[in-house]
Image 1 (cartoon, rainbow over the protein chains, first blue to last red):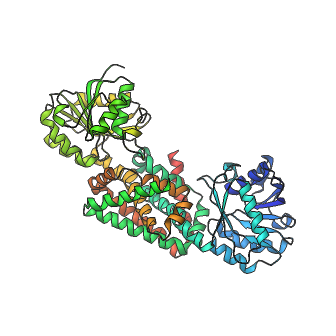
Image 2: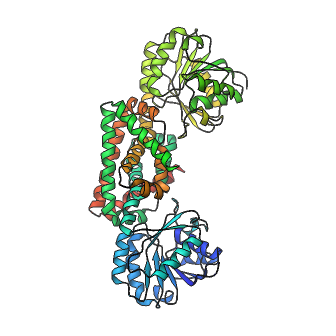
Image 3: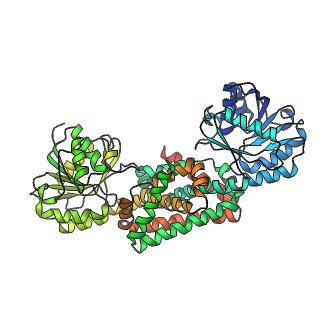
Length: 287
Length: 287
């Protein structure tokens, strides 16, 4: 596999950024991996570990001569960062992001990006409950889907290059409308997180929870606490930016929960059994 | 380790019953493992596989000369089964169960059990989302807690023998009041299941869900579908029998979810971040 990009700059070095850096270096897909970050100490350590080649904490000093910029920060600051970097970039630079919310980002960036630069919205469906580049690894994207959300005006060559890059790190690329993406991920990802946060926090209020709840938590509950340990700022941003689709998903769930609660209250065994059997079939469909 | 019981009879041969049979046979803790079940074909296969030594589909033919009876059926039928078997049992037989709900079972059984028989309520905290003896394995109880819920009148020697048996298959035994047990497990186990069922079923109603939801489900969502694939009859029984503690747990969760939903609606970043950070701390406490 030859070199796809002479110089790639990561903006933000968390789990996704760090893993992408390791993946492209290991596969020699990029000549040089630069990184723009906030903490010089953390960036230096990442450089010493060989995850990145060079770094900077100021935008002006690093982004002017790169072919690809991957914005891998919490979704709340992506648009603002891209807006700031646009005047600094050379003609033909491809900009992409890895945010879990796409519509607002794509719409806003398409509104100001000049013709000389190419934007391709992206979302690698890869994450763990751990965050930070310390938890990153080069095979994170293998066998996972990566969604790209081009618009009518997206530069086709830039889109192709992004597809190739993600395929080369092991992902299956799926192109999708950004609004459709946000609707699907409100259901399969954002809703489960909001539910897990709510459940874990509601249990924190139970009397004597340390003795009783912590020591008996098993099975199902542990899955919830793992989900609810996800990066707080990242999820705050996601919840706010996908409000449009997340609120209806929460409300749909609330209706179902209320139905089950009422079935329990009136001891409606038939209804409960019917609902529980439905869920089981769902798992079978997924096999 | 010598033989604890000459003859143990399992009533119901699912994941827990099958695993207990394998565990006691492997460790030679029981002379003979009998099983009362409903499907002769399934029982014969279990016998051929060496999981049990003998079986019957009629109570009268198998329970009269055993030292220990372990009722390992869905919780909804445990009391009724014990009531039926009482007249058939020899003096000194110990009866235990493995149900996930304890208060109603313990109260009812203590109400009719004669002095000549010994009842000890039990709940091994061990399960997978799989059910049936085909999914059973002899190490299921290793390193797991097993809760016993004796009452003031529980025969001490019977309690000691049950403790020894569970310790011998690798469990940590914890004695607990049956009402307290039900309150704790409403929170850490029953609530997460009801939530998972509600979420999975609410998503089933989304248009085009097979194409969109199934193919993009990842991380968090998969945990939910796994939980929601648990044994429907078992969970129907649990929900109904622990209604007293489950309904308040659901309502507490609903309050928290509503709070988060309203924070998203009014875009209250501070509130969201605060709640999400709280959940993260919970995970750290569990380490």
